Length: 221
Image (tube, rainbow, N blue to C red; front, side, top):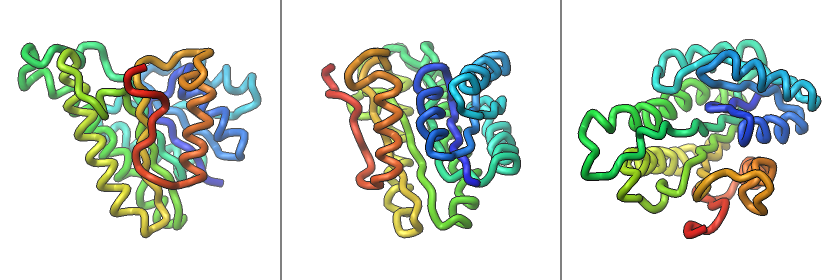
């Protein structure tokens, strides 16, 4: 059995993706910083018929994340699908003229060092399988930078560049890399940004395997 690893799992999008991939027979590995939140998420998924396992890891501590992904692969099966979708901290979103070098450390750890570490951890297993999918989920500033959200604008741009490079490099190996840009907030009940709708989009990206950047909604929405 292979698994889906959801890095930055929460009760909204993370849970919806876990349900969607779980229905398709994937073992589900959830990664977050807080054990209690993970346990509640796992319990809720179990009640909906999806068996998931939680692994504590902070994406700003690359080696911790690598070890957690390794444990997940050992316990649940090779990671065939990696979704990197942690929600950025609010203090990453400072105006550009108030953003100094130290203010960029956190965003870069979060959106560059974390995903690079995660990809490096799962890539050998995907290569052994001969297939895999890597999904990056970002906010609208990944596509259009915002002067009041400098940290995420800069870090998401770097994450996007990394993802695009992977998309080009790994396509020939049967490993698809794609990005979903979600402008604004994930909103239950929204026709395009409801968590279950977004989970279906991500499932489609995994199955259809075309193109790098996809948009959940119009950028001005």
